[in-house]
Image 1 (cartoon, rainbow, N blue to C red):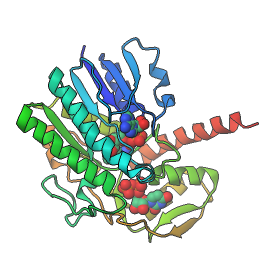
Image 2: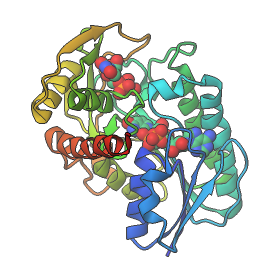
Image 3: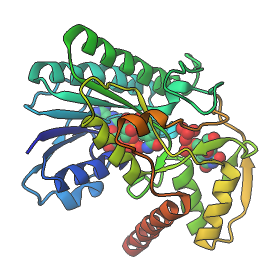
Length: 319
Ligand code: NAD
Ligand code: UDP
């Protein structure tokens, strides 16, 4: 049995990861400050004696004897990471220093949840790991993009200087149950709008693209990466290469929900990447043939079911 620390464990991805690690017979410490995460995501795990919940902020040091650390703590949606940009960059950078310091002291293996945002608004398509990116250092997305880029640097330098065993994954847009319905991300926005019969908000002309990965595929890739050969550090892309425009996504969600919602067009936010698609050749090669299994419509149906239940719960508590 391994003792595993998951920072950001009460968030969307973290909650699925905690559950999977517990199911595999590990002891899990879930650390979170609940900025965007919620106890609701992990309440079903709390009866498990091998699950421990810690309210803590990664910008402060933390000590525990652990074998592995998954470092996920960081708001991930543009609305949330832009709410307090200074805090966002501190979470990525100071959080990485603190978790790497812990990994160094207790000789734990540590995985960083990096992001496709390190490629910025990419001029290379699809994105391979050796592409250095096209990032505005002083724009509204910079607190997140540059924070994550600096965290990757710190991970590599702790490895080179202190021999810490590190793993870096670059996650592309991921969706699924436990997403925060108010975090402004496109999948949660469109589904909530469709279910409520509200207008679907397309930013820009809707021709920008993203590649959407279902959360179970990501969690499988994360665990394979943690268990990969010690000399494979990454960074490695984890995402679903099937690419869609936001218009296609909206139309699919309208079809799957049977909604009568109409599309409305709103201004495109600053520095919004025009296209994004992972090249996953490296993941396939190094992670025992890993590739996403759940394609968009199947994953969306599971996510729509989750949000429908959430809306029913909300309506149930109304006077
Ligand atoms: P999320 O916002 O649901 O989860 C982040 C969690 O970190 C939340 O529970 C939040 O409360 C916690 N947190 C934030 N700041 C913290 C702090 N200072 N100390 C302790 N906890 C803190 O987001 P998510 O989608 O689950 O993303 C998880 C990780 O994966 C993030 O690091 C994100 O950057 C990365 N990622 C996610 C995606 C995606 O599409 N979901 C894409 C790329 C990268
Ligand atoms: N988007 C949109 N309508 C929304 C929310 C987002 O058209 O209500 C667009 C957004 O401009 C971006 C894409 O959807 O082009 C993905 O946005 P998200 O915030 O989910 O992720 P990111 O931009 O970080 O990939």
